[in-house]
Image (cartoon, rainbow, N blue to C red; front, side):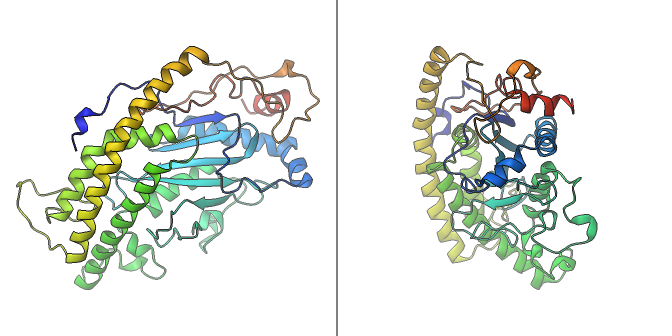
Length: 363
């Protein structure tokens, strides 16, 4: 595949943090918190104030490799995308998590669902979407590792990226943590085999993401894999030919093979290379179409033309819009194109007074 044919001009930048007016219909927790009791609790000033604080923390402090979207019509829902760290079997991947804030938040921790696409890539990330993490009280831990009212969403996302998506996930298995630095060849080889399987499953999950990107993150998916196409294909080739262990840099001597590649792994990597070539080639056309679409969006919908949201959970707010907060939060940007612009102008600048009062109290 000639990745040089992929257009490099970016019509939009995909911000690390942004708000969308309407919640995504493919969100795992879409039908949660729909009772009248839940809506009433979420509209309490203390709960709203806490959520506004979380939005502010995320908007100012997200690492460049984590992306979050919040929803003005459903402030209890969030969606996060975490890029797989370099030097791990998750490198170049995008991993999506749907988050639900319970109606008594922050008394109870958020619920977090991982989009696994049917692949088990980590002892802490189940096929079912269950996320095993002490910070959200889904796994045992020391008292200072569990959720408290002072914990934040940012801590959860950074923990998932740093503690779960690490370079040797095999040792995330219960009881194996103390063996992480073992020099015993048996444990080293077990970890290597686990990384090999993890990389294959991760790649298969990414192929699903490329073909079916989550709502509001289509631009991130297209831009990320467009930009990383050559690196992904080169890494698969290096692993296939034994020039590098999964997640590690290849030998500097081109063509030299130093690591044994088991027949099944070689077959899997050969298949993946072909599948990625086809998927990334299709992405070339997708990127072009997105840029064309973006031009028409700019002509028809000037930035900041979105309408005002009437309430956090419904349209029953009775307060005046005169107290709307007009200050925008600073938002980090990446150079990834997107056909799904976050609502910057409306975000905390065109929300009704109930939002405004909560935000102004923490600003």
